[in-house]
Amino acid sequence: MSIRTIRQYQLCTALFAFFTLYTLFATNHHPGFMWYVLTFIIGSICTGTGVVAGDAFRRFVHPDVLLASGSLDMFRKRVFWLFGPQVIGWVIGLWIYQTVMMKFGYYY
Image (cartoon, rainbow, N blue to C red; front, top):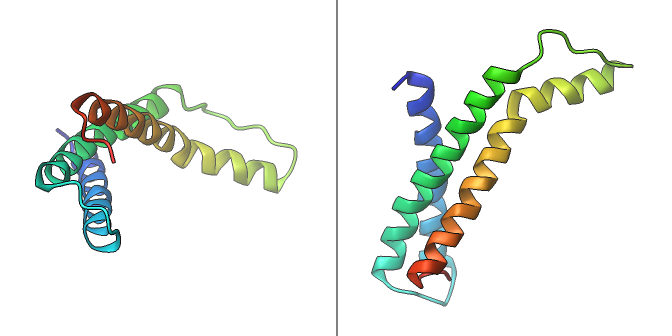
């Protein structure tokens, strides 16, 4: 594993740690200990894998030259190619996490 991949998994783990702690302390609905454990583990793995896959896709298809009609158009294209595929991968990983949690009957 490269340092880049480890950092992407660390970021997703930190996001799901925040999400798990937020649902533990900020809501009145407490689904149980196993829900919190599974949310943290499965959510971190699914979204981390989605971000890593999105980054691999971005590095594979990133264009060598970006053509734009103006500075704002160039800014949008550069920001998309910097974050877009990873965010799309994160959303797909979140969707997979929700599907898995519903199959287990733990979705909240």
